[in-house]
View 1 (cartoon, helix red, strand yellow):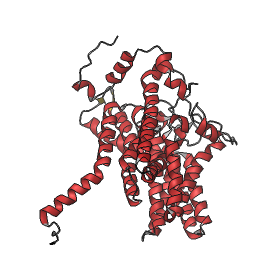
View 2 (cartoon, rainbow, N blue to C red; view 1 turned 135 degrees about the horizontal axis):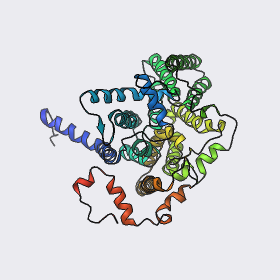
View 3 (cartoon, helix red, strand yellow; view 1 turned 180 degrees about the vertical axis):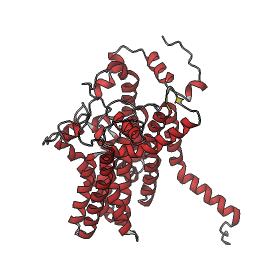
View 4 (cartoon, one colour; view 1 turned 30 degrees about the horizontal axis):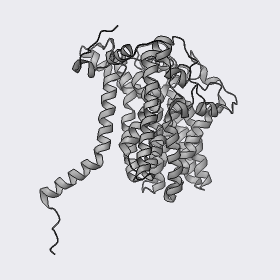
Length: 437
């Protein structure tokens, strides 16, 4: 029998494009869903809490403000380019967008956009690991954790940036253990990223300690020293910026970072309680944890890399045993564990990859249910909770937030109208058939 000749010319290109399209379909769908959701619901102002402190620091950086605090000033450094875009738009005559100053709108959108490059890095990582369901895992980790709340409904806080920076660290650690020819550059890049991460959120220092300790355990002493030195130097140089501006970093009007002690039960509270437990508010993390265990057992070639990133994730969890606050005050879920986002994506993809046949269908069903639960809590907290909880904190846990609709006697029609009213894309296309009442 005569063998068919391989496709040539335009046919080969078409075949390659079709194969690539099939491979990228899930990722493209995930991107479209993410962009659509953000465009439809994204809040265009800097929310309360400590978010205004970083925004005011950026204003001080641009000379628009006489005094400011340098609390988590690294987030301000990330916000600075977006604030600059706002200043340029103001010069063109654009002063207000959606009822808010154009600079604030640009910063609010920019603090959420930092997760976009993190998503690209995770796609590259998961493809390099040859794992399955990349798009599904990304969507589930985004909508099933607190990240969606801080990107879309409460922008301006450092949690999305914290998650994006830890994603970069995980990716660089993979490149390092893969034996990249530019290992020396990777070490300095890791140190610089970790040093900058500390200025965005001081608890990121736990990641650096865990990584250095892991390398020492692997007897890679020289590499551990390089990372430790580059982290310290980067951090010291960056801290010179707020000091030069005369903006206090650990004091001023926001001194919560100075509180410390030893509270060993905090990590357990942050994982398991209904009040702010990660596993209760974001059950996709339970599935991800199972996937991380399976990945370690099934892929012996990845174990040095996995040990390093698992150690950093555990350090993030354990670090809050040294401060009295753990619930995050007015918060959606366990916001302090938002940087675990890349590990959630990795674990979910590993779980899908390990499952076959009906087991994969069951994993998909559980993932959808867990993500829907978290998104339901998110909608309740934003569309109803904002009218109920007016103080700096609230006592309800996940169950209480889930019951908000019945507790506040909010009719389903009014609830649906509230979601519809805040939409940007749906409202112009689909007229609301009922009155507000």
